[in-house]
Image (cartoon, rainbow, N blue to C red; front, side, top):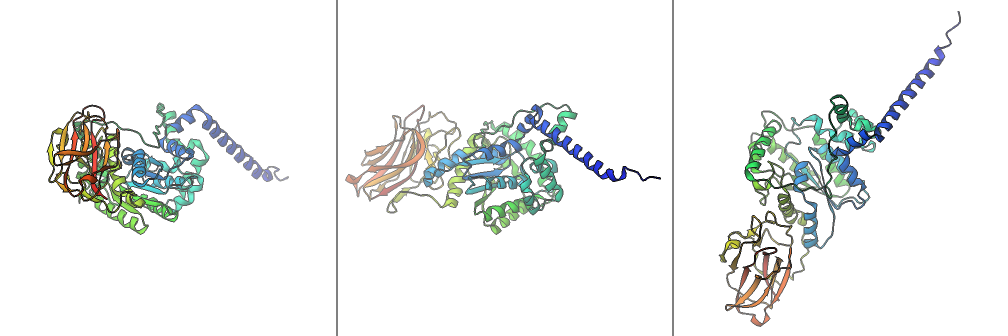
Length: 498
């Protein structure tokens, strides 16, 4: 009996079959990649479109904010740029690299992408929401970054963060096959006949405006959203600790090793959020652990949970702010924290100048105030509907811009008397330059020097010559008798200088 002639060819046949299958899979994926469906599914994913846009931006960014939608709403990169230019004399570029629902797994992918950009950042802000290390964090959405943002070269970092070999394999497959990258949505479209979604919005340098809503609507939305956080934050339902901790620590390590200044930000929330962030929640354990780890890696921590510049009316729900809220929050974050971390203000004012009124105290002790525009003029940041206000010192400044907008309020504020011990009075001044607006130095009831704004919200030093009145008593009078466009002043830090 002759031996079978097919036995020796079986391995070759198997290899041919495997090769044919592999070619078929690759061919199918290439076809899908180039198809209208494949292109549409990739374009509708924030997790794919935004990182690609950042990578394609040749200018990159000096400051990158990384977080979830809380940071996406609250971090206005253009406000940061303006403050740094005015207070430090630097022109830098900022990027809002936030994604909806993005946990530390997504943060690490962003960090890797930023560090490998031709123009890597000098500073990275890692914004953490209180639910990010909860055992009750929904697994599927929180892991979207694994297949959409990671690339084959990032697999070692997944493993270093404590990810499993299966996680690394998933990232590798997604990098090789476009269909795997959008698999959940592809299944929805093909099996559930779900329609395609709109192309993911990308904003400008990652930031998009969000409209203001009225307070009753904010309160309703906040109440509904707080209910969803009960499962993630209250100890009756969850415990502190999840796989996301390893990704956070790996981000801190990478940024430290690349000598990137790192700021860990506790994300913003409205007052209604306090119901799920007290002693019955995992939040105290969360924030204590975050602070300890940040300190261990040389990162700065900023408590942005309840910044003094935000009220519930600045929010669209319990943890997403409007565009006006974003200006106020980013102004506070930059002015009160980031400028100092960057090395402090570069103020040209001579050290010999003596500040007589810092205009930080809301009660304005000793001042006489008249008119509606002076009812509560001290603010910690720009008013709602006001443009970005930069250039103030200390914690606040005076503005006659009304809280509700419109520039219709009028008024006058007169300071307590002080002695002109120098030849000049310097005032940080911004706002309008229209008739009826003035900051005056008054001696014996007569205005001896005055100035107004330049139709620009930014406060800049204005020097008033008072040498002819040196040694005499004077008062500062801030007049707002203007109405309409630019009918307001921004005033801060009155000083007597040589």
